[in-house]
Length: 280
Ligand SMILES: C[S@@+](CC[C@H](N)C(=O)[O-])C[C@H]1O[C@@H](n2cnc3c(N)ncnc32)[C@H](O)[C@@H]1O
Image (cartoon, rainbow, N blue to C red):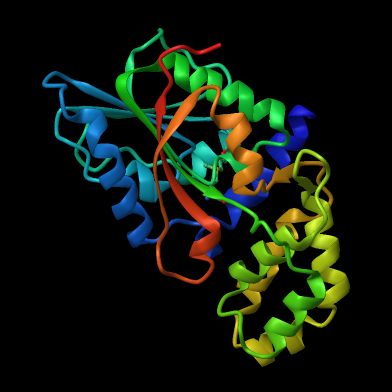
């Protein structure tokens, strides 16, 4: 992927961050579950603990971590760091412009790695392997990787199904519609879709934004967040659980899978993962 393309999509995203809502951003219920699943990572460590946040998602960075915890956030976008990063409200914290595939940390030096929606912003399966290998390297036992993951249902729906659902009042928020359109597009063999195709599919099936706003009650500002997806060559990935497992299991055991109770939560799984003892 082009470096400029990476920065381009996240530049748009950072500029409209306040307009983005659930399920793209985690709810309080999500972060409560994430914190609960993180607890075993801290249980036998009496000294200073360290948490790595993948990205700068404020709802995750600002969790009430144990007092002795140092929080460091890694994100490759200077724009996202400049507009979204806030230091933790009470714990020591810092941020660095870093790719998750190559973190400036020694082996087995971190108690917890946590992130929201991180896998979907990786463009292909190889990046999944790169991030899993790197996180498994830096976690010390009994460390955990806790991730909220956007997963396609095993049986995909069509975009026509999504359009029908919207106009029969069965989709509550524009961000849910955006994710249902994204997951209804036929992905390539590595479950990836071009972000520009999400925009194009939306434009062709919902050409009249005024009418969409009128029939759903959604604000034009929320609907216009789709324009961040226009004219970029970035790809997002939405694997099913069956597609994710073969990428994950060489590096991690799945300890627990939970999800919340909000709209589309059944596609927003929160995984607690433990590094395998013998990584190939
Ligand atoms: C944490 S993820 C998902 C956040 C949110 N749930 C959403 O959907 O917008 C978004 C962040 O990941 C960052 N990012 C994407 N790929 C990355 C990589 N390979 N290394 C570091 N940061 C990356 C982006 O810059 C962005 O700030």
